[in-house]
Image 1 (spheres, rainbow, N blue to C red):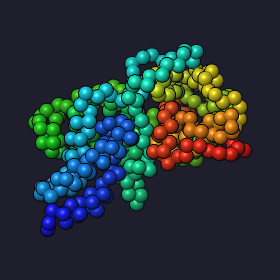
Image 2: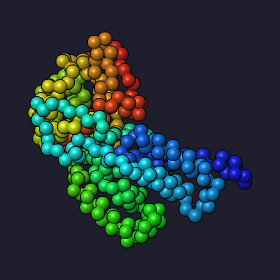
Image 3: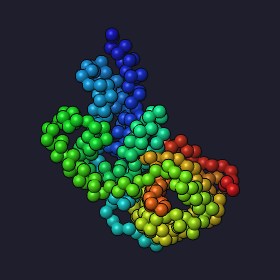
Image 4: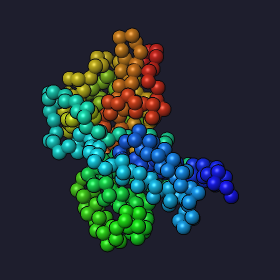
Length: 330
């Protein structure tokens, strides 16, 4: 087979792995936009080298090797991507001035639609969503890049330690040691399992409907009742984070541009295996424009965490429109 024919064979053989490679690069990088670029780079490198692929491993494993190396190269000299809760500062008061930190490379959410696997295999989808939950991705950012790679390859992809060692050019003992350190660090910063409940039952769906209605009706009293006592609200690129229902409601009341029912509209979506909403704010011309993308964490008894991202470019990644013309829903 000629070199050209070999490369023509590459595209259909490799394309089936694009979604899981995107999930892998996102776990490493913490940015949906950068992850998409790194997957493109991975496929370009693999296409160029495909005529030399000898089949000693599966094509899938070979692509993961290239993707991991590409991510590690991209992470050289980079700062980690945190959420405001990961900056090490205490919680803020609702009266504190909002401080925007545009220089911080903030963590980004990722749409489930880009990374969900075979819809005929619910177990695979559930496992993928669990390994992509926002709090875990934020926790991974606390690890040095090579430790991060070790943890993902060993714990998420279930690679043997020897294969990870070969990829990273180190020993099996060093991989096992790095895995132990990574696990210990993740246990310190990762949330407990009961803090990441997916909306799978009627009660949780009803809770999310009340949450949407409270925003669209600008009913702050109703919204306050939906938060748990330890609820946290954070909103990159602002560096503060806020804890407790009353503090969160005071923050919204003090700073939200909305003044009444109909000023805000929410479109449901799914991010990192969790419920999410694109929130649109009505302008003077009556048009609702992309304002913030909220990823909502549900705990026992209510909403326990909201990460509200003020990044309009995320709306496109989620397939959400930039504007919603017309009047608010009744």
